[in-house]
Length: 220
Image (cartoon, rainbow, N blue to C red; front, side, top):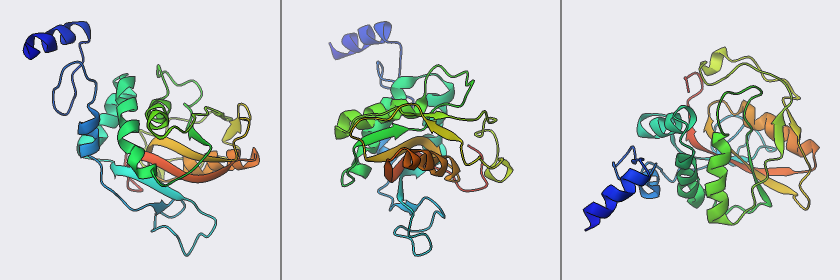
């Protein structure tokens, strides 16, 4: 009977988990959790251990997995396969990393100006995090400048982001602290510029999070 039910679900929702093949699921939360490791947080400025002796003004960055293998595959399916449901599952899976972190809001890194994508993949991840952690999502940032897409370039070949790369779209009431979220973190530059914009808006970033962490000098 379960086989018939699964077939019926597949006809209605023609999606399969790319990791286990389960039908009617873009990505099983259990499968996503299986890719994650309880990595220690790193300093967002130098990628060294956190707390950081060199950067006392830094904040911790949490990540679920290295940007390789199946984890990289999921990120690409989310970003380029236009399957937003994957993002929600990734957010739910990542939530354990922030279990001890308190903040007033979760803020996604916004899409670039003129992006052809149908949705913001980082926002999809934050929706899963928000559902699990009961921390409100605040999509309060936008790009302030037009920059070329960064993902196809090696980190060493990327142009430096300007100081005013981001701006506040609105000022969320009662929000004093936030966690910044992105799908991939390669150099930390995007997160640091976003944190600067939030700080100018009176919001302190207490941590950042990405599903995967790329090595500096590699491709996304």
